[in-house]
Length: 75
Image (tube, one colour):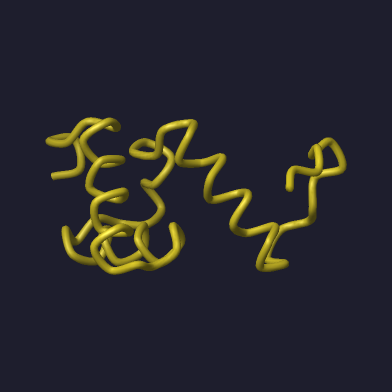
């Protein structure tokens, strides 16, 4: 059941998977959802704001999302 895990616990699983497999956040989220048989449409209930921001940034870098015009250039 989707409600048996907290947002924070789910985010830790995503971070752990990403580090262990050296994958992107997008891949980590999808694979973790598949591993635990969670429905991807319920992602909004499990993703924390920092994780959403990381996914958005990654999506912009991969040209999957429009780039934000408010982003400061960091070297």
